[in-house]
Length: 301
Image 1 (cartoon, one colour):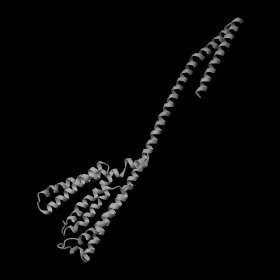
Image 2 (cartoon, rainbow, N blue to C red):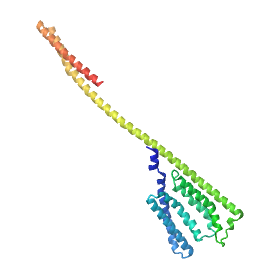
Image 3 (cartoon, rainbow, N blue to C red):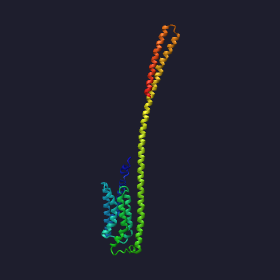
């Protein structure tokens, strides 16, 4: 089996992650639908904004499922990762809908969304896209909340995070958690990829051995069939030789013995001459029989 074909057709990483992408989008649709329905009953501005965010996220998920259906898998994967980020973090910023608590969990929420990239993109043929997505989420995790804080409304008191030592501690915490999470996931991704490649190679070797075994079995069946046929022919010749020995050779021998006995008992030369002639004739017959047997034995060899 061709290893490249097996990688592209049977164990293709891109195709392997498509069902996962669909599951993510379906989960988003069903999970987000619940708060979206509940948001209808809250008539406040916050309820309307949350409802809008939920509807946008559900729309993105439906679009992603549709793209996968029409084999636009790479676009669907990118949107699957970016659409929650847009709805949760970009959309509120565009409409100015944020409060102090946002800035506490923003970096960690973005970090978690970026981690989905490791489960959506393959390491083999989508590595560049994966690295771009991870780089994007690293930068956004580190700097998005700081940038957003500069344009936040003045009534938000963010000094407990973005002033003095607090800012440094908060930034270091982001870096430490981000490094630990993404390095662990990347190590797992590489290990999973290598194990997959090893499994492909093992399967390829097993398929190769199975093919060789099939060929050997086919050859063995041929050999057994040929030898069985040869044994049948040999048995047939043995039966023929046995028949010749028990009938034709034995008949000639019996005639010769009988004629010799007649010679011993005969008192007349004419009778003895007749017996000698018959012995000669029978001996020639016996010679023909032995020649025939020799020819058949030579054909067998």
